[in-house]
Amino acid sequence: MKPSSARPLAALLLRVWGLLLALCFLLPCALSAADWKALKATGYVNDFAGVLSPGSVRQLNDYCARLEKATGAQIAIVTIETLDGEPVDEVANLLYRQFGVGQKGKNEGALFLLSIRDRRSRLEVGYGLEPILPDGFAGSLLRDLRPALRDADYGAAMTTAVATIGERIAQAKGVTLTGPAPKRVEKETHPGWVIGALVVLLLLVALFGAARGNMRGGGRGSGVGDVLTGMAMGALMNSGRGGRGSGGFGGYDSGGGFGGFGGGDSGGGGASSSW
Amino acid sequence: MKAILITLGVVVLGVLAIGGWLMGVRNDLVPQREAITAQWSQVDTVLQRRADLIPNLVETVKGYAKQETQIFTDIASARASMGGARTPGERISANGQLDSALARLLVVVENYPQLKSNENFLRLHDEIAGAENRIAVERHKYNEAVLKYNTAIELFPANVVAGMFGFTRNDAYFKVDPAKREAPAVKF
Image (cartoon, rainbow over all chains, first blue to last red; front, side, top):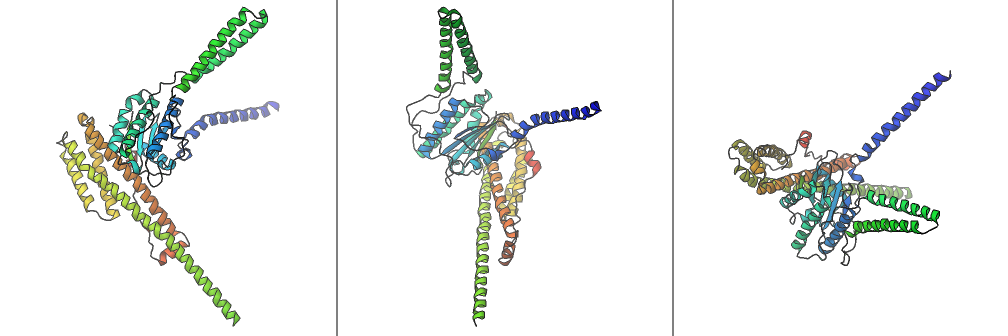
């Protein structure tokens, strides 16, 4: 009696296990399916694909804030992982209208969209900026970005692009932008795992040093430990500086932060390209 | 006497309420009908924008591909029928003709590598592609306006008011050919 009742139980367990496994595989797909309406603007830069370094994001945000203060024009930068087979033009227009880039009624806004896996780019131009950023100009700018995009240097591509259209807008409005243009940020020299490894090393060295110190009752051993600890800590602090410092241009008026987009509209101006 | 007065009062109030409601519904429908006209003029502007860009593109292509006379004739006749079309329905169908002639031109261009790398051509192509995207966006907004209006006049009880004041269904929708949407885009 027992084996026959155990078998269905085993079968049931197997089925549950199978379901769980299937769920594990399905869940990421379900999450990554196109739900553009769920994307909310968090700033000028919306790096949904996670391909921009913190330094680049800060520089771009700073520059866009200053541009808005000086000219009233708003720029959005959006990176996404994939378009899920939808045309880049439609996704860019949908995101533009959803975010509402540019002030309502004036519609002076532009939105850069990079879809990383599809290698598609688009500059969507709001009604108000159409005379300043004609489609031919937008297309030629996107073609100029191809080499940087092919190198997966998305931060450099976006800083160049934003500076180019920023200058063009400022010139058309007869104003000058204060502060530096966003500068090319070096690719992150210290990815997260290096910092993690350094923390582990630091802990090990500290433990090792402490253990040796206890065994010998101080003296030379703990001295070596201290030196190693110091070196590891120095490296850590350096890496921290590298990450933050790459965007470090203190001292100028950054023009305040992101105050939200203004409800602008776009009629599909701009251009698309691929890389 | 008192009863008659009360009845009269109730009737007057009822007539006033119904009249007010009728006016409210009508005043709601008018702007929706006007929105279609306004959005149509947006569509018409971008249709014209593309039609105006085509001669430049054709001239540039002719510089490299003189022998493709058939396609140039097709484009010219499509543009001519576009110029003759007046009502939204006519414009929509003439525009479809221009769509297909232009698509064939861009396929032809694929055979001329020198033309494809010409910066002037690339910019013109961007302008044309931009105009087409504007058409797509504006006609989407236009369809939305038509749909909103058609829904509004057909829902009860507004349909009664719509019938009384002569609000009729507007069927000048843009239809997007699903096969065309999936056609591989020519990339430069």
